[in-house]
Image (cartoon, rainbow over all chains, first blue to last red; front, side, top):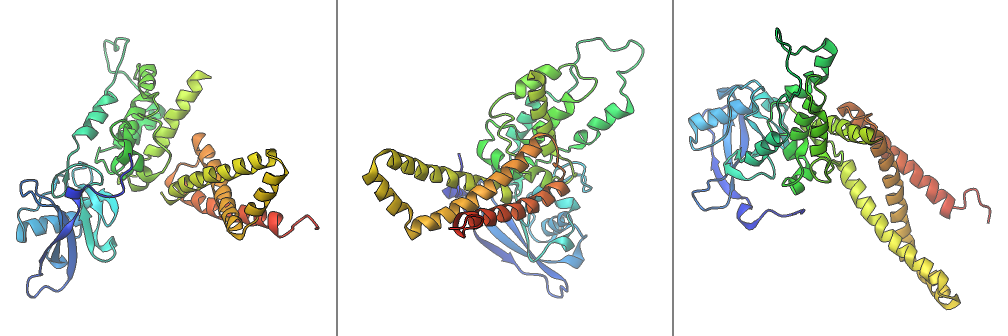
Length: 260
Length: 112
């Protein structure tokens, strides 16, 4: 159900300001959502005045610098720092993106960083993605076959067949798309969301997969698939430039085509 | 995002407009007294303001609905295409709105 205000214990309070060190020349305010479940306090928005000369160019560099130099309790996920692991997905200046591939220079005004929207927060910028991963698992993201594989080699694909799954298979499961989707915000307990549906599509169109019918059966449901209303936020925010909206439209088309 | 929100709001607005049409139909079926009263109420300035709102809602919802039909065929779903079609929807719905207003109230095509 749609909710227009945050629950009472989630409303964001004014936080602490950490002034820039003396002698800093290129200062930018970085405002970061802080939440500590152990404190029993509401979340707050801390301001860190950061000398952007002291760190690398990306938002992730700023976070690492703040954690190292100012506040070691700042909590966020990161790993590869090159847009392939999907760990540092967060809401930066109102848009879901990867902190590691977002240059600070491209952001207007203060840098405002929140965890991915409409997810339970574990701490600071770390959302609880348990449900999101369970939905991914629910579409059975692995090759399902009935026929035995050729005895002497792998199941081969033509170049064209591979190209069909090339883009959808590039998804890094960062959850930027699903957590940008209003339908997912309001119905995530039953709607699978763009990331899981893109994964489903990737296996439906895989020339080697032999469970296409079952996969489509699983999705033929008023909520799991059809809560997509082509809002296009998913495609808009995808940091890998993938197109979950089109994948979902293609699944809907396949469901129509197989009955006619 | 914006086009989607507008589509929902105009759709909801049109449902409210339908209630008004139901009222008009029952009044028409309810004999001359009810008809005369309905004619009076429905030509109040407030009602006319509401019709303008309905025309806006109708134009936008119709055009945006056509965009959704095209999307359902799997076309126009690239990010750049969707951006462009959003502007087309805005332009076409304003044009349609002006045409309807011209025909309905400014006497276009119907000499009085």
